[in-house]
Length: 217
Image 1: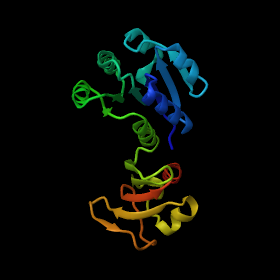
Image 2: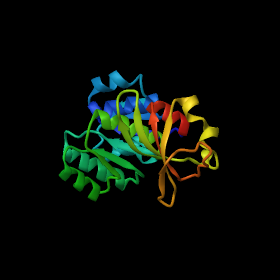
Image 3: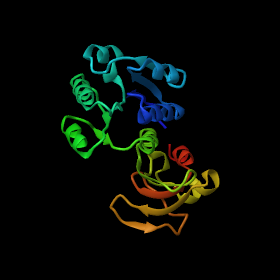
Image 4: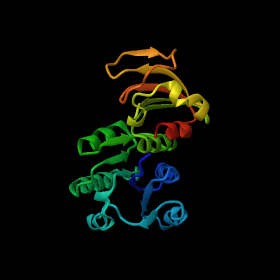
């Protein structure tokens, strides 16, 4: 897993969950909020936490947010502030900005003015997004229960040319692989552990999401 620099602006339910989860996964996390109490509660659990107004371009410059791998705007209670902050970040050259929104209409507006992705749910989306940030080759996550997840994942370069038998996912990580899809789109059920995998192929696997992240990092 590649460590990334992520800024989370707004520490409501979604923002706090995301900041904590990303920090647990080993990323450098900057948490930003106007509420000093929220900052004090999280400051020892993330890389850095600051009380700041993200609608102020001088503040954004001072925090050097344009150098971060990813910025997540999670202050969804004030849409005007979200629009202003997103506009300023893009003006400053921020590479990737994800935004938490409350409605489909808000989502459409945010995408039109430069959001790279819009999230419409809270706690579950925070965990899902944290996984996808940590492991960009994940396509879809379906949580069956707390211990079992169905995940569609792209084969990374370090697994290119290896077989499922060599990887031994079941014994090492308690992960089961069910479906294999080649880069040309052809998909089939997995019945032969000696089948060779190639970078870019897709696997549908089931298991604990943390173990899946560990196995495919």
